[in-house]
Image (cartoon, one colour):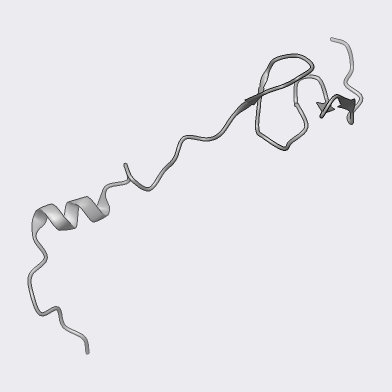
Length: 61
């Protein structure tokens, strides 16, 4: 069975367990049609447009 040769310090252990460095902020871009925030390379959930073309027919609310 593998056994550690040296004790892992509390600082090193806690740095590894920290979730701060693991997550990145999600990327957002503005929709060309309505200006709402949307995920890049995805259809806008607000208006249904993608690259200036209506992909999903949205009902007028």
